[in-house]
Length: 163
Image 1 (cartoon, rainbow, N blue to C red):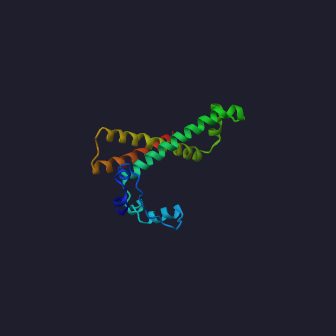
Image 2: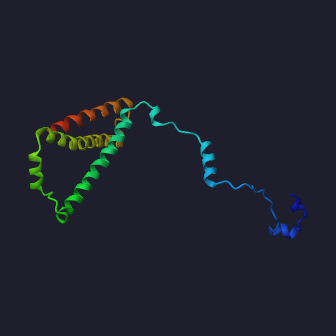
């Protein structure tokens, strides 16, 4: 303020006055400054402090099953397309022969492993579509529909595995 009083009116009007700002002389590492700032941030609660609920577990498993199904489809399609160039035999006749050579327990296990994510994702997808329509959004209905999806998924996966 003192320099403003001593400056000429023309210098003040043109903004040519010198402003003094104190500058720290210690050179701190920017990463250390960020570490100190992060220590002052509030910490949000971790998921482990909450009681598991069928709603968020079901939604998480829906995403996981979707990623697993689409990822396995892309891997299989890529392998199928690349198989002639690589000398692999992934044609239908070879797959039928390979499945026929497996023992019954291995067939049921393999089919159940493939069927469970598919059936769960399908039934839970219908549940999500109902939510999108605004139906079944009360806590009791969410819990009942979640366990219904689990039951239907396991039952239908076992039925498909024993076909």
